[in-house]
Image 1 (tube, rainbow, N blue to C red):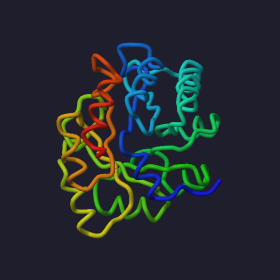
Image 2: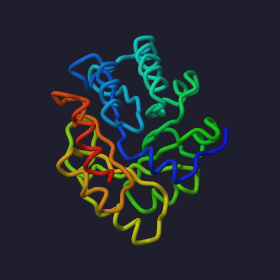
Image 3: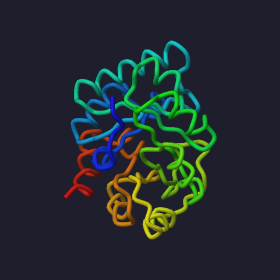
Length: 217
C-alpha cells in the first residue's frame, strides 16, 4: 500500500462525516448509509463522550459502520484509537493534540491515511513534519457536539496557513452546516467535516446532499 497523494485526499475531505453512536437519534448504521447516499466522501468513527460505547459494543458498532463504508467505497477512519484502527484494518486514523503523538501513529499505521487536528501554525508545521496527510482546523464555529471543544476561532488559522504557503489538505470542523459550509471553502479549506448537521437532521441523506451541493461545483 502506497501513501495516498494530496489531490486524492482533497477530494475525500469534501464532505467528511464524523459520528459515533451517541451522536445519533436513530440507528448509527441507518444514519451513515443515508448520509453516504447523500454524498459523504469520507467517514470517521468517533465514539467518545457521554453515553459512548465501550469494549465489545464499541468494536461491534465500528465493524458494522466499516462494512457500510466498504460497500459504498467510502474510506473509514478511526478517531484516536490506533489499536482499534489496526485491529479493523481501517483506512486511517485521526488524532488530536492530546492523543498519541503523530510520529508514533505514523510509524504504527504505515501508509494509511493520517489526519491531525491543529490549532496553531506551529502545531500544523509539526504535524506535517511527522507525517500528517491532512489537517483538521477548528472549531470554526461554536459547537456543542464535542464536549471538550475549544472556543470557536473562525477562519483565521485556515487563511493564515494558506497565506503562508501551506499546501497540505485542510478540512474545517466545528459548527459547520449547509448555511455556512461554502464560506469555509472560500477561506481556503478543501472540505468540511460535520457531525450534528447530518446526524441530527430530519433526513440524513438530504442534509448531506445540501452540504455537498454548497461546496462541490
